[in-house]
Length: 160
Image 1 (spheres, one colour):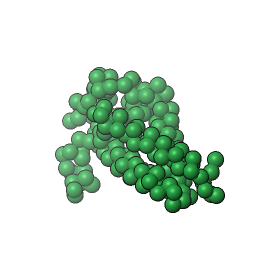
Image 2 (cartoon, one colour; image 1 turned 90 degrees about the vertical axis):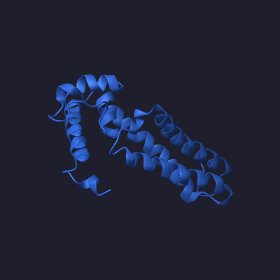
Image 3 (cartoon, one colour; image 1 turned 60 degrees about the vertical axis):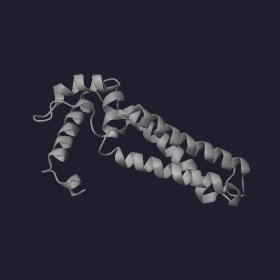
């Protein structure tokens, strides 16, 4: 655990080197990105790699990876999607009544899962595995669905 914040650790130093190379990719391809997938990343990354970190299949950071693959606009759209889903779930949690207890519980669990994934995404590209990618979006969809169902029941503060 202590090696997370130690630059002297080889794993941390390697990850930082990859992030620097990825930032160079983003700087040069900020609008459209380089394309999706580990093959595209590895093919382009080698041109921007720092010494000692010449080979990488992904950026080891979900947010850098989105920016590198699809451009900054995709990162903005990603943040908007996460924000809107989370906001609807938080509204249900805060303003939902006793009849929405189940939907509120789903929102608490799903927001917690999404937050954990986003936190993990700071230090790894969690979408390298497509099952995790699907699960992440499924969890966000659960938040929206629970909030929509909760709105159907309605109460004085939580209505359309």
